[in-house]
Length: 135
Image (cartoon, rainbow, N blue to C red; front, side):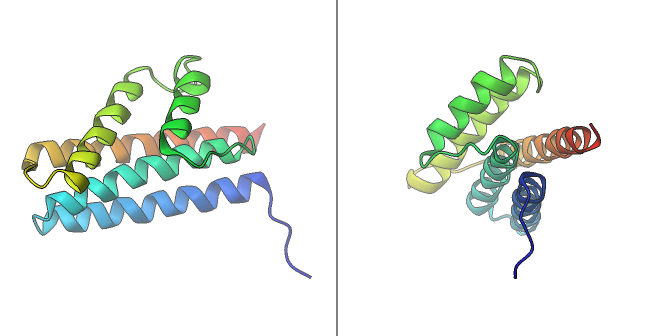
């Protein structure tokens, strides 16, 4: 008989996945592989957001729906800082340019910003999950 999966353990699983994506982003950045670093930084952000949504048993098939829900119920309600909405949107745009625009050449600074956004959001989500678990 398997161990029961709680919403908190599932959220922590998704957060761990976000942290692994962040490590991959940082490694790619150190090797000047900015396109890949931007992709991994975005997915670190995306998986961190999905960790929060796991606590509500909410999920969506499309990225835009995940981001819209997070903005509506977590950013607009100020459970997370409003500035994160702009940072997340920027990361999404940079990731799409990195993945789909053959003429896009990301800068070192731009890529570093995406990684910092991912690191910041992961820290916020980690605190959010910890606070809920302690209630």
